[in-house]
Image (cartoon, rainbow over all chains, first blue to last red; front, side, top):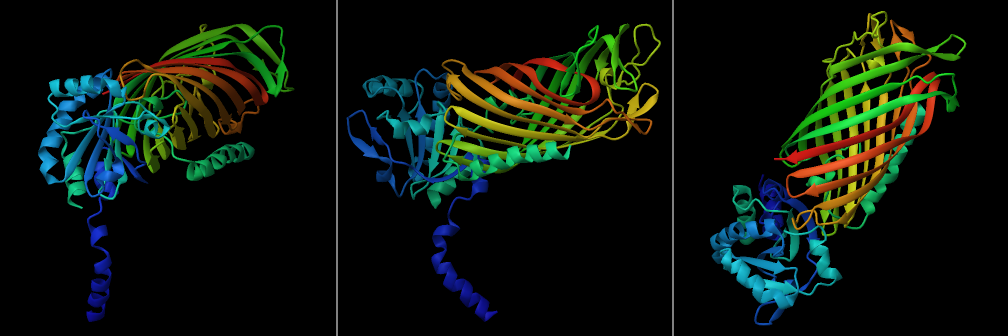
Amino acid sequence: MKKTILIFSVFSVFLPGLSHAVDTKTVELAGAQVLNEQASDIVMMDLAGHTFMIKDLKGQAVILHFWASWCSPCREELPALEKIHQEFKDGGLTVLAVSIEDSADLAKMTGLAASLGATFPVYATRRDADAGRYWSLGVPVTYFIDKNGGIIGRFIGEGKWSEEGVKRLVRKMAAE
Amino acid sequence: MKILLRISFAILASFFPALVFAPAASACDYCLISQGISPLETFSGDGLRVNQRYTRLTRVYNGTNRVKLDASPKEEHWTTDVTGFYSIGDSVTILANAPYRKTRLDGHLHVHPDGTGEVHTDMKGAETGLGDVSVIGRYSFFKKHTLDGSATVAGLIGIKLPTGKTDGRTDDGMDYLDSHLQLGSGSTDFLVGVSASRSADRLTLSANVLGSIPTNGKAGAATHRFGNMLNYDLTAKCRVSGNVSGASKPAVFLSLGVNGEARGREKEDGVTLANSGGHTVYLSPGVQAAAGRHWTLELAYQQAIYHNLYGTQIGEDFRTTGGVTYLF
């Protein structure tokens, strides 16, 4: 018995990160597809012209959401996403709402999001082949990225933002 | 039959390594675009599907050889399938299908003991009503989603119930209609299958196999048993316009598939029917449109391109199918 406790204690030193990792069941219960790959980096730009990449957000849980003004489910979804942003913004979650339209329209996109009640910033991205992989199925599409920069889940189409399963996923992402 | 099983599994076996080693692809299990353009493709989510199918048979075959007779027999089948489907969680879907059928005979093929045939053109008949209801469960046991796409493999198991009548007669009331023209089989049959799909950007490849193991039923006054059946298809689908999850305009897909039906010989009152069973292969182009989050429309045409029928029989010419699916 003492030997067992000792062995477990030795291994548990190496396990704390794993013990907080978001499991696939949590992702599935959120109604999201389970993914398990490192987020490929894309350049994003805010309204002030500052650029950054996904890797710059390492250490934060990220909801990476792609949308467009011409997409009616996208517009309908923004208020629900805003509620998630409000609930978890002080708990270590970053919402990145990235428009897939031309960066010249970013001011218009920002105004549209604000009119729909969104307070999170809207970003543009370089519309190259790497970025295009994220929205090849269309928009809206949302990726859940953990603090290590790994994509753990995806909503294709509107997300189930009001459901407890999604909130549980976000809580776990922010806590790990 | 064994050769056909080997062919079917070879098709799937060649598909599975591609699933395992393929580069990342996009999902199809989740969404509208897997709503049935291939004949056997089953569904995810909750919804209702209504599909209209028409099959015509006029040509006579002996093995792979076309047999020309003085007159042509003719069978027509119209089937309106109503399918409700309900998902339990992310991996399990339950489907219930109720077919409403209309069958028509316009000239019956009679085969003599020496294998030669003649057509009784005065023999006509028709039946209309509920066919055999089926219930199928689908479980996705393999799902791999990546940034660029998805691969999914699901197992299916189901049962077909003897809800259709089996005692339809010719117009003159003198004879019972053949088993294929009856609305039902009178038997409880067991269904088992595998369904797989892999998507990459605009392209989706799906493969489905569904086997049917029948039990004893009825056809007219006789005990009748259909042979074991294996239905399979391999279908490629390409999104030519629109986005899957956006709503600016409908997503339109073009598809091309090969599908086949392999049937064992039938038995009537314990006697194997020599002129029954065989293998038919179709080439199936189709189009599908997903309009918004709820609606999918589709049309497909299946041209019979290969027959290998046991004995002398009437075989399918073509089939047309069109359907609408509503996701709740």
